[in-house]
Image (cartoon, rainbow, N blue to C red; front, side, top):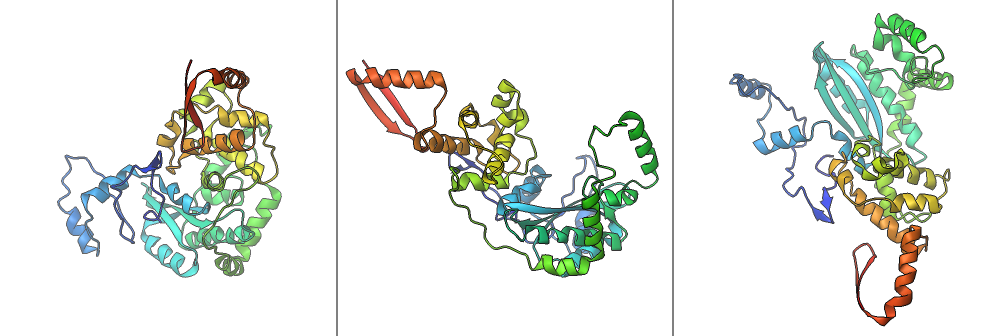
Length: 366
């Protein structure tokens, strides 16, 4: 999946030209102090049937740590599952996942200090597909595989509140008492411990009927997902909106967000709006058009995006669509300047050039 992930672009030019091809196998990355003697590491790896990979792969994988969501662009949606498995049972858990889960599973793991491995699993899908909800049952299948091997859900929260006892163990009573004391009205993160009634019931039923649900889920795979221009949103922009992982790393880098103070002005907010608009829950009016126009084109979001999405280029595409094709207004001062220029510009000489995004750059001489 990482090998197939789209390249990082800058003005339509590939930035990561030297990205190495990874072997189609489980890759383990070891980090250690430079002063440590690891002379036995190579022998241990080869003795376990492993291979020492080139230095460029080690460097790339280290820089890409915690960026597994990058392959979400192959989705454009992911069905997640996050579990803990005892280290000594990890190979068995992998073997069972390979046999029982028919959809490709991207798995990233980290060994923690209490003898467990945290496994973060993703299965490619599309949330716009009618099959998405049936495929979601496979996350429960992965959880059951973990539980059968002495593991558990990684955390509780709204979805797995019914698993809170196995997650928190003896600490649960202490956590509940502290929450009751500090937040008696349940204002902060409501329902993260008790969950929602219907959701708890659905998860419990899904766990009870897991074998049947797994059969249905395995049959709900999707092929290549294609997008088309829809409701004033260009196809390539819609695809990026559904690919966005909503991680929020772009928010802290956005000048428009700092200038206006509302997260709706950030890249994450705009991607979320586009999805809501395509779902029919929002309107694309002049106010929202101004949000797309407000981008300063600094491209800091591009450099910070965990998915290497061409964000700034998408906003320029939206400007072209909304202003040039849909005839939406720009900001009032710009409209006044444009009207004045068009009225008086005929008395001078002008040169005109059309950019890649459809915007025209005009130089005038009077």
